[in-house]
Length: 436
Image (cartoon, helix red, strand yellow):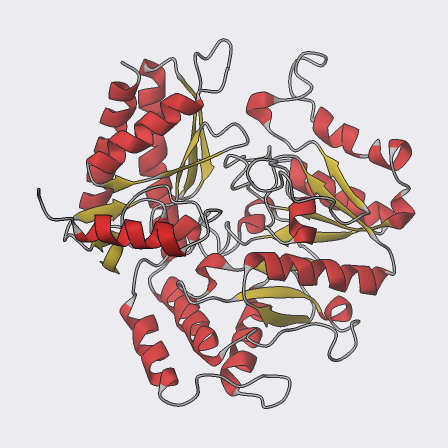
C-alpha cells in the first residue's frame, strides 16, 4: 500500500476538524504562492485565474506589501483605534477619501470583511435618513451575515434554512440583459427593467420610506452581469428624485479590476456611499465604508466600528496595495487583459453553440454556458466539467451565477503575457473537450 500524500493527510484532518458548512471546490492545499501562481504541498504549480475570488488583484505575496506588513508587525500588531489611535488608519482613510468618485468632502471607516462593510453602510444610511427601507437587486451578493443574506439574491447555498431575515428589505430585477425579464413582452431593450423599478414605489413601499439602494456595478456572484450603459445613471437619477441614497458595493469590482479604480466610474455615477474589501489589502482582512462626509458623520461616536477594524497590519497593506496599483498602472493592465480575453473568447463563442454569452468590463469576465444558444438553458454540469478539466491541467477557475453556469475570470492583474496565453489556451481546450 502506497503512503498517503500530504494532501490526502491534510484532507482527512480537515474533514475531522473543520465544519462541513465550509465548502471546498478542490482538494488542493497551498504551501506558497507568488504573482499568478500557487504551489501546493506536493510541489505542483497552478495558474491562479480566480485570485482568491478577487482578493488578489495585485497577485500573491506582492513584495512591497509583504515588506510593509513585516515592518509594521515589529512595531504595532494591534491597538483598538477608538481608544489608542495610529497613523496608518488615518493615512488610508485619507487615501480612500481621495479615490472615491465624486466631488466634496468624504470620510471613511474600516472593518474586516465585505459583509461588515455592507452592514455598516446600512446602519449609516438608516441613521442619516431616519428611514428603514433598503433596495437590492436580483442576482445580488452582499454577504452572509443576516442583513447581507437578506440583501443577497441567490438562495442556495447562501440563504437556505437560515431565515427569517431582517425586515424592510426590497428586491427588484437587475439588468441581466442575456436573460431579460421583459424581452418577451417588450421586444428590444428599451430599459424596461429601469422603467419597472419605479413600480416598487406604488406596488410595495412608498419612496419616502426608502433609505438607500445598494448595487454592485457589475454583479459578481450573480454571474458577472454587466448592466447596459443607461442603467446605473438611470437608477442614480431615480434615487436623487426620491431622496434615496445610492450605495455602490465595490467589494469585488474595486481596485482596478474593471479598468478603473472602482467600477462605478465606468458609468460616471457618483455614489453617496461605497463599500470596499477583497483587493483593498492584498489578502490581509480589511474592508471600508467611504462616503460623503455629511452622511458618514451622522452616526454618533461609538455607534459604528469594531475591535479589529482597521488593524495596523491591514492599513499598511492597504496603503502599499493602492500605491502598487497606481505605480504599476494596473487599471490599464486590466484593460489589456480584458481585451485579450474577450477577443479570444468571443472567437471561441462563434464556434461553440453552447457558449451563450461572454461579457465583462476590464479583467472581470464571465462565460455563460448553456445547452444551446437558442434555448439558453443553463448548463451547470458542463460548467463543472470545464472547471475540472482546467484544474487537471493546472488552471484554477471557479463558477458563478444564480444557475451555477458561469465561468468567472478574475485573473491577477500582474499575470505575465505568457501565463495569460497559457491559461487561456487551457481554458479554450477544456471548453471544447468538455462539450464532446
